[in-house]
Length: 390
Figure 1 (cartoon, helix red, strand yellow):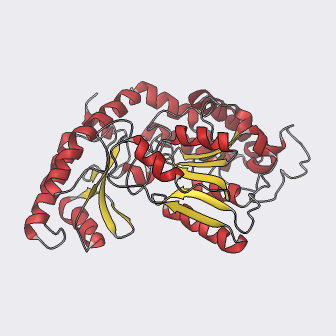
Figure 2 (cartoon, one colour):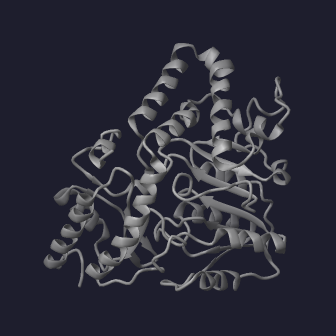
Figure 3 (cartoon, rainbow, N blue to C red):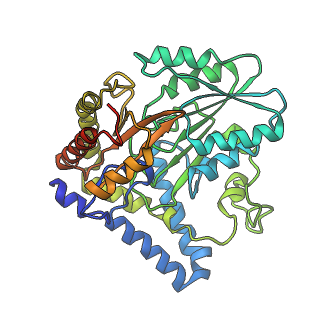
């Protein structure tokens, strides 16, 4: 199916060159209609929904997820976003003064803020090892990361795919060594499901959270927390409600605690079957593979245009359907607005400390015209020499 027909399956504004799928994702119409169907079911008969039909649909949705990502339905629960999942974990860590959390300087700002909050309360230390940019190989990342390890290190935390720099980090290798060292591992996989392969059954991460409403195409509000069995009993619920000392225990306290936390619309959590159907019907894995190849092709071209250097080798080891190109600007917000208002391009200008990047996300609905429009727009703005400095 051609790109135009694919884009018609989404509710996106057809007049906008949408190159920012990475921020929130986009939901296709058939899945969105399924989502609205569940919302209507809730409103028609809320008692039956919360006690029977919704619960049955949630189990079915979880079974699809478990098949997709090689895990047990007993070992994860859905949340509204990764931040909720992450806070559930960090609140239960029993951090002590002097404990260290080993991380990187490439992490998502919301997670940095969460660690800073709890470290200030407990006296623990959040260690953000600087990862060299650009880097030449995986070994450079691993060496830089593990140079921050010492006898006080208790926890390893990092993104599977970074947000501002759009880099795939060697999470498998880091989790493997962390397990050997007896460290707890917490992985932020917000950008991973539907983007790069994820096997929760073999990955040695103790806690893993991801967003389905990004690259997997779910409605906003579908994320998850997967927890290895040996850590499930340590997690008190973020919200204490009917699942605590349940009148109708399921036999799994972990799920009782975390799946039933008050009245809420969990319709988005029921859409895994329709998501799977859409991805199969439109051969979405093939579309994603083509987008990844396109990223490898355009990354050096945009680097040349902007006089920048690629942050990593041009390889699927480090790049998926996104890439971040260093851009020389002192007016990032004005640049983003100019790209949208003048050229109808939706794209983020991300930052890492004092450095700025233009992050290109490609999804199955993007075409060469989207890329060409961005390239031409940047060329025009560079010639004006107001928002992009040469």
